[in-house]
Image (cartoon, rainbow, N blue to C red; front, top):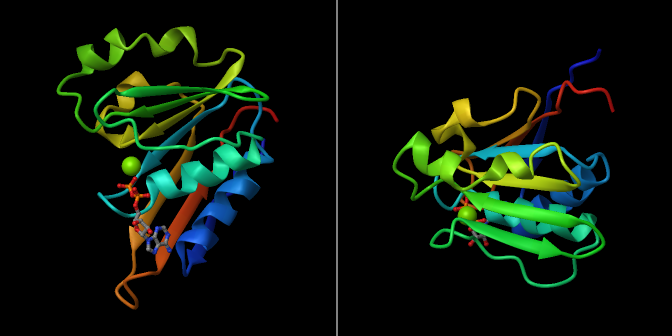
Length: 148
Ligand SMILES: Nc1ncnc2c1ncn2[C@@H]1O[C@H](COP(=O)(O)OP(=O)(O)O)[C@@H](O)[C@H]1O
Ligand SMILES: [Mg+2]
C-alpha cells in the first residue's frame, strides 16, 4: 500500500478545474472524495473539474440549500454539501450510505465538519488561499488508501 500526498499550487480557477480533471482520471466507482477549505476557496470549482473529467457535461453548482445534487452522466455522481447541516444525525438522514462504496462517485464539500460520517478510505482534497496572491490556492490531495 502506497500513500502519496500531493501539493499543487493553482493560480486560477481554470487551473483548479484542471487539477479536478486529473484527479477524476484516478477515481474508481465507489470512491468518496472529501473536500475541506473555507468558503470561496474553490471546492465547487475543483468539483466542476472532477465532474468534467468523469464525462459529465452539464452544469455543476453548489448544492448548499438542497444538500445533495445527483448527476447522471456516463457514471452517477453525488455532489453533497455539509455546510448547512447542523448535526451528525442530519447527515445520516441524507442516506449517503446507500451510495458510498456503490456504483457512483460521492463528492462532499465541507466534509471535515462531520468526519465521523465518512468512510475510512476517502480521498481528501484540502484547498487553502495563499498569502501571496488572491487568485492562488494551495491544493493538497491525499488519495484513498483503498487498493486502486
Ligand atoms: N485559483 C483558484 N481556484 C479556484 N477558485 C478560484 C481561484 N482563483 C479565484 N477563484 C474564485 O474563487 C471562487 C471559488 O468559489 P467556490 O468554488 O464556489 O468555493 P467553495 O465551494 O469552496 O465555497 C470562485 O469565484 C472562483 O472564480
Ligand atoms: Mg461550494
